[in-house]
Amino acid sequence: MMKIRELQAFDAYIRLGGMRSAADELGLSQPMISRLLMALETRVGFALFLRKRNKLIPTPEAFQFHQTVVRGLESISALSEEASAIANNQRGHLVIAAQPIFCDTFLIDAIAEFQKTHPHVSVRLRDTGMSEIMRMVAERSCDFALGITLDADPYGADVTSLAICEARCLMPKGHKLQHLSEVSLQNLKRETFVDLAPGSPLRTRIDYMMQSIEVERAIVAETRTLHGVVRLVEMGVGLAIVDPVACLLLDEDKVVDCPLLPSIRWDIAQFVPKDRPLSGIGLAFAEVVATEIGRLKTAGVIL
Image (tube, rainbow, N blue to C red; front, side, top):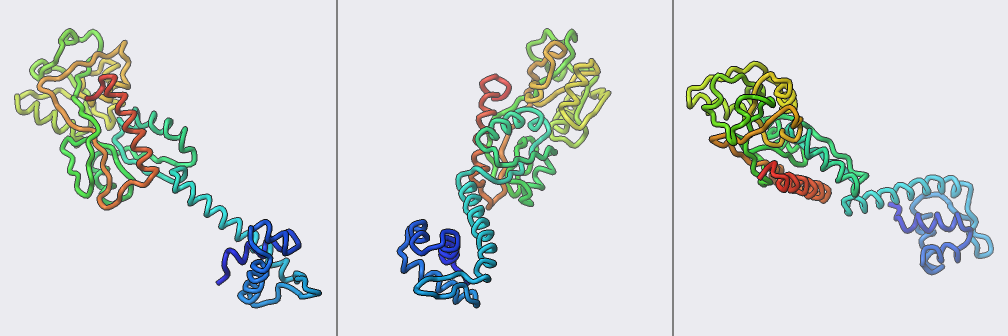
Protein backbone atom coordinates (compact mmCIF):
# COMPACT_ATOMS: atom_id res chain seq x y z
CA MET A 1 0.00 0.00 0.00
CA MET A 2 1.33 3.42 -0.96
CA LYS A 3 2.08 5.82 1.87
CA ILE A 4 1.06 9.47 1.93
CA ARG A 5 4.61 10.66 2.59
CA GLU A 6 5.83 8.80 -0.50
CA LEU A 7 3.13 10.42 -2.64
CA GLN A 8 3.96 13.85 -1.22
CA ALA A 9 7.66 13.36 -2.03
CA PHE A 10 6.78 12.22 -5.56
CA ASP A 11 4.47 15.19 -6.12
CA ALA A 12 7.06 17.67 -4.85
CA TYR A 13 9.82 16.17 -6.98
CA ILE A 14 7.72 16.24 -10.18
CA ARG A 15 6.46 19.78 -9.57
CA LEU A 16 9.75 21.31 -8.47
CA GLY A 17 12.12 19.29 -10.65
CA GLY A 18 14.81 18.54 -8.10
CA MET A 19 15.71 16.66 -4.96
CA ARG A 20 16.82 19.72 -3.01
CA SER A 21 13.68 21.74 -3.80
CA ALA A 22 11.45 18.80 -2.83
CA ALA A 23 13.40 18.29 0.39
CA ASP A 24 13.12 21.99 1.32
CA GLU A 25 9.36 22.05 0.70
CA LEU A 26 8.71 18.97 2.83
CA GLY A 27 11.28 19.74 5.49
CA LEU A 28 13.16 16.48 4.87
CA SER A 29 16.71 15.58 3.89
CA GLN A 30 17.60 14.80 0.26
CA PRO A 31 18.52 11.17 1.10
CA MET A 32 15.07 10.77 2.71
CA ILE A 33 13.35 12.10 -0.43
CA SER A 34 15.37 9.63 -2.50
CA ARG A 35 14.36 6.70 -0.27
CA LEU A 36 10.70 7.70 -0.42
CA LEU A 37 10.78 7.88 -4.23
CA MET A 38 12.44 4.46 -4.50
CA ALA A 39 9.92 2.93 -2.11
CA LEU A 40 7.02 4.36 -4.14
CA GLU A 41 8.50 3.04 -7.38
CA THR A 42 8.69 -0.43 -5.85
CA ARG A 43 5.05 -0.25 -4.73
CA VAL A 44 3.56 0.96 -8.04
CA GLY A 45 5.18 -1.82 -10.05
CA PHE A 46 6.43 0.27 -13.00
CA ALA A 47 9.36 2.57 -13.63
CA LEU A 48 8.83 6.11 -12.39
CA PHE A 49 12.34 7.34 -13.18
CA LEU A 50 15.28 6.83 -15.50
CA ARG A 51 18.68 7.18 -13.80
CA LYS A 52 21.11 9.42 -15.68
CA ARG A 53 24.27 10.83 -14.10
CA ASN A 54 22.94 10.57 -10.55
CA LYS A 55 19.74 12.32 -11.57
CA LEU A 56 16.22 10.92 -11.65
CA ILE A 57 14.43 11.63 -14.94
CA PRO A 58 10.64 11.08 -14.73
CA THR A 59 9.24 8.59 -17.24
CA PRO A 60 6.10 9.34 -19.31
CA GLU A 61 4.25 6.94 -16.97
CA ALA A 62 5.42 9.05 -14.01
CA PHE A 63 3.84 12.19 -15.46
CA GLN A 64 0.64 10.25 -16.15
CA PHE A 65 0.63 8.85 -12.62
CA HIS A 66 1.32 12.30 -11.17
CA GLN A 67 -2.06 13.58 -12.35
CA THR A 68 -3.77 10.89 -10.28
CA VAL A 69 -1.49 11.56 -7.31
CA VAL A 70 -2.39 15.27 -7.35
CA ARG A 71 -6.10 14.46 -7.25
CA GLY A 72 -5.54 11.95 -4.46
CA LEU A 73 -3.55 14.40 -2.34
CA GLU A 74 -6.21 17.05 -2.87
CA SER A 75 -8.84 14.58 -1.63
CA ILE A 76 -6.73 13.74 1.41
CA SER A 77 -6.31 17.44 2.13
CA ALA A 78 -10.09 17.92 1.85
CA LEU A 79 -10.63 15.01 4.25
CA SER A 80 -8.21 16.57 6.70
CA GLU A 81 -9.98 19.94 6.48
CA GLU A 82 -13.36 18.22 6.94
CA ALA A 83 -12.11 16.33 10.00
CA SER A 84 -10.70 19.55 11.45
CA ALA A 85 -14.00 21.36 10.85
CA ILE A 86 -15.95 18.56 12.53
CA ALA A 87 -13.50 18.49 15.46
CA ASN A 88 -14.01 22.23 15.89
CA ASN A 89 -17.81 21.97 15.61
CA GLN A 90 -17.86 23.93 12.35
CA ARG A 91 -19.30 21.38 9.95
CA GLY A 92 -21.97 18.70 10.04
CA HIS A 93 -25.70 18.04 10.04
CA LEU A 94 -28.30 18.13 12.79
CA VAL A 95 -31.83 16.75 12.82
CA ILE A 96 -34.02 18.30 15.52
CA ALA A 97 -37.52 16.98 16.21
CA ALA A 98 -39.80 19.47 17.94
CA GLN A 99 -43.41 20.39 18.45
CA PRO A 100 -44.76 22.84 15.86
CA ILE A 101 -45.16 25.73 18.33
CA PHE A 102 -41.44 25.57 19.14
CA CYS A 103 -40.56 25.46 15.43
CA ASP A 104 -42.75 28.52 14.83
CA THR A 105 -41.14 30.55 17.64
CA PHE A 106 -37.86 30.30 19.56
CA LEU A 107 -36.26 27.57 17.43
CA ILE A 108 -36.33 29.92 14.42
CA ASP A 109 -34.33 32.44 16.46
CA ALA A 110 -32.01 29.68 17.69
CA ILE A 111 -31.16 28.54 14.15
CA ALA A 112 -30.49 32.11 12.99
CA GLU A 113 -28.18 32.68 15.97
CA PHE A 114 -26.45 29.30 15.54
CA GLN A 115 -25.74 29.96 11.86
CA LYS A 116 -23.74 33.07 12.75
CA THR A 117 -21.01 30.91 14.29
CA HIS A 118 -21.65 27.63 12.45
CA PRO A 119 -22.33 28.61 8.82
CA HIS A 120 -21.40 25.16 7.45
CA VAL A 121 -23.68 23.16 9.75
CA SER A 122 -27.11 22.34 8.34
CA VAL A 123 -30.04 22.11 10.76
CA ARG A 124 -33.19 20.25 9.76
CA LEU A 125 -36.27 20.89 11.90
CA ARG A 126 -38.96 18.21 12.00
CA ASP A 127 -42.17 19.66 13.45
CA THR A 128 -44.35 16.90 14.82
CA GLY A 129 -46.38 15.72 17.80
CA MET A 130 -45.09 14.05 20.95
CA SER A 131 -45.82 10.47 19.88
CA GLU A 132 -43.78 10.93 16.69
CA ILE A 133 -41.06 12.77 18.63
CA MET A 134 -40.72 9.82 21.01
CA ARG A 135 -40.61 7.40 18.08
CA MET A 136 -37.82 9.38 16.40
CA VAL A 137 -35.83 9.51 19.62
CA ALA A 138 -36.26 5.77 20.24
CA GLU A 139 -35.23 4.98 16.65
CA ARG A 140 -32.32 7.47 16.83
CA SER A 141 -33.54 9.23 13.70
CA CYS A 142 -32.90 12.65 15.27
CA ASP A 143 -29.97 14.10 17.17
CA PHE A 144 -32.24 15.41 19.88
CA ALA A 145 -35.80 16.57 20.38
CA LEU A 146 -37.68 19.32 22.15
CA GLY A 147 -41.07 18.48 23.54
CA ILE A 148 -43.24 18.64 26.63
CA THR A 149 -43.44 16.25 29.57
CA LEU A 150 -47.22 16.46 29.73
CA ASP A 151 -48.23 12.78 29.40
CA ALA A 152 -44.98 12.08 27.53
CA ASP A 153 -43.42 8.64 27.85
CA PRO A 154 -39.66 9.25 27.59
CA TYR A 155 -38.95 5.67 26.58
CA GLY A 156 -35.52 5.34 25.00
CA ALA A 157 -34.51 8.90 25.91
CA ASP A 158 -32.43 10.85 28.36
CA VAL A 159 -34.57 13.81 29.46
CA THR A 160 -33.41 17.24 30.59
CA SER A 161 -35.93 19.81 31.80
CA LEU A 162 -35.32 23.25 30.33
CA ALA A 163 -38.29 25.30 31.60
CA ILE A 164 -41.76 25.12 33.15
CA CYS A 165 -44.90 26.12 31.28
CA GLU A 166 -48.31 27.11 32.57
CA ALA A 167 -51.31 26.98 30.26
CA ARG A 168 -52.90 30.30 29.31
CA CYS A 169 -56.47 31.12 28.36
CA LEU A 170 -56.83 33.18 25.19
CA MET A 171 -59.91 35.22 24.37
CA PRO A 172 -60.76 37.83 21.75
CA LYS A 173 -60.26 41.40 22.93
CA GLY A 174 -63.49 42.78 24.37
CA HIS A 175 -64.67 39.40 25.65
CA LYS A 176 -66.74 39.56 28.84
CA LEU A 177 -64.12 37.57 30.81
CA GLN A 178 -61.12 39.72 29.92
CA HIS A 179 -61.37 41.75 33.16
CA LEU A 180 -60.52 38.63 35.24
CA SER A 181 -57.00 38.38 36.61
CA GLU A 182 -57.37 34.58 36.53
CA VAL A 183 -59.85 32.45 34.60
CA SER A 184 -61.27 29.39 36.35
CA LEU A 185 -62.63 26.37 34.55
CA GLN A 186 -66.06 27.22 35.99
CA ASN A 187 -65.87 30.61 34.23
CA LEU A 188 -65.62 28.75 30.94
CA LYS A 189 -69.03 27.11 31.08
CA ARG A 190 -71.15 27.81 28.02
CA GLU A 191 -68.19 29.34 26.16
CA THR A 192 -67.26 28.29 22.63
CA PHE A 193 -63.74 26.96 22.11
CA VAL A 194 -61.08 26.64 19.47
CA ASP A 195 -58.83 23.66 20.16
CA LEU A 196 -56.05 21.41 19.02
CA ALA A 197 -57.07 18.21 17.31
CA PRO A 198 -57.83 15.25 19.61
CA GLY A 199 -54.80 13.26 20.72
CA SER A 200 -52.48 16.11 21.65
CA PRO A 201 -51.32 15.95 25.31
CA LEU A 202 -52.69 19.41 26.17
CA ARG A 203 -56.07 18.70 24.54
CA THR A 204 -56.28 15.40 26.46
CA ARG A 205 -55.50 17.08 29.78
CA ILE A 206 -58.05 19.88 29.24
CA ASP A 207 -60.75 17.39 28.22
CA TYR A 208 -60.13 15.39 31.40
CA MET A 209 -60.22 18.47 33.66
CA MET A 210 -63.44 19.72 32.07
CA GLN A 211 -65.08 16.32 32.45
CA SER A 212 -64.05 16.24 36.12
CA ILE A 213 -66.21 19.32 36.81
CA GLU A 214 -68.91 18.12 34.42
CA VAL A 215 -68.39 20.91 31.91
CA GLU A 216 -68.89 20.09 28.26
CA ARG A 217 -66.98 22.41 26.00
CA ALA A 218 -68.58 23.66 22.81
CA ILE A 219 -65.66 23.17 20.42
CA VAL A 220 -66.48 25.03 17.22
CA ALA A 221 -63.11 24.59 15.47
CA GLU A 222 -60.10 22.28 15.68
CA THR A 223 -56.69 22.59 14.08
CA ARG A 224 -53.42 20.68 14.17
CA THR A 225 -51.24 23.57 15.31
CA LEU A 226 -51.34 26.25 17.98
CA HIS A 227 -50.52 28.76 15.26
CA GLY A 228 -53.93 28.01 13.75
CA VAL A 229 -55.62 28.12 17.16
CA VAL A 230 -54.22 31.60 17.85
CA ARG A 231 -55.37 32.90 14.48
CA LEU A 232 -58.92 31.62 15.02
CA VAL A 233 -59.09 33.28 18.45
CA GLU A 234 -57.92 36.55 16.85
CA MET A 235 -60.84 36.25 14.43
CA GLY A 236 -63.29 35.90 17.32
CA VAL A 237 -64.21 32.28 16.65
CA GLY A 238 -63.82 31.21 20.29
CA LEU A 239 -61.64 30.94 23.39
CA ALA A 240 -58.62 28.64 23.69
CA ILE A 241 -56.36 27.12 26.32
CA VAL A 242 -52.83 27.08 24.98
CA ASP A 243 -49.15 26.57 25.61
CA PRO A 244 -47.72 29.92 26.85
CA VAL A 245 -45.18 29.89 24.01
CA ALA A 246 -48.14 30.36 21.66
CA CYS A 247 -48.57 33.84 23.17
CA LEU A 248 -45.50 34.87 21.16
CA LEU A 249 -47.64 34.56 18.03
CA LEU A 250 -50.70 36.53 19.06
CA ASP A 251 -51.67 40.06 18.10
CA GLU A 252 -52.09 41.90 21.42
CA ASP A 253 -54.52 44.31 19.77
CA LYS A 254 -56.87 41.39 19.09
CA VAL A 255 -56.30 38.85 21.87
CA VAL A 256 -56.09 38.85 25.68
CA ASP A 257 -54.29 36.06 27.55
CA CYS A 258 -54.97 35.18 31.20
CA PRO A 259 -53.71 32.62 33.73
CA LEU A 260 -55.86 29.55 34.20
CA LEU A 261 -57.16 28.06 37.49
CA PRO A 262 -56.42 25.37 38.39
CA SER A 263 -53.12 25.71 36.61
CA ILE A 264 -51.92 23.13 34.09
CA ARG A 265 -48.14 22.77 34.25
CA TRP A 266 -45.55 20.83 32.28
CA ASP A 267 -41.89 21.04 31.37
CA ILE A 268 -40.26 21.96 28.10
CA ALA A 269 -37.70 19.18 27.89
CA GLN A 270 -34.78 18.09 25.77
CA PHE A 271 -34.91 14.43 24.74
CA VAL A 272 -31.68 12.74 23.62
CA PRO A 273 -31.53 9.12 22.42
CA LYS A 274 -30.12 6.82 25.09
CA ASP A 275 -26.55 5.63 24.53
CA ARG A 276 -26.05 8.30 21.85
CA PRO A 277 -24.58 11.43 23.45
CA LEU A 278 -24.77 14.72 21.63
CA SER A 279 -21.96 15.52 19.22
CA GLY A 280 -19.96 18.71 19.52
CA ILE A 281 -22.26 20.56 17.12
CA GLY A 282 -25.28 19.10 18.88
CA LEU A 283 -24.04 20.46 22.19
CA ALA A 284 -23.35 23.83 20.56
CA PHE A 285 -26.89 24.03 19.19
CA ALA A 286 -28.38 22.91 22.52
CA GLU A 287 -26.53 25.78 24.22
CA VAL A 288 -28.08 28.27 21.78
CA VAL A 289 -31.53 26.79 22.43
CA ALA A 290 -30.95 27.12 26.18
CA THR A 291 -30.05 30.78 25.69
CA GLU A 292 -33.27 31.42 23.72
CA ILE A 293 -35.31 29.68 26.42
CA GLY A 294 -33.54 31.85 29.01
CA ARG A 295 -34.78 34.91 27.14
CA LEU A 296 -38.34 33.61 27.30
CA LYS A 297 -37.97 33.13 31.04
CA THR A 298 -36.69 36.69 31.44
CA ALA A 299 -39.68 37.94 29.42
CA GLY A 300 -42.03 36.02 31.72
CA VAL A 301 -43.40 33.77 28.97
CA ILE A 302 -42.27 30.60 30.76
CA LEU A 303 -40.88 29.78 34.21
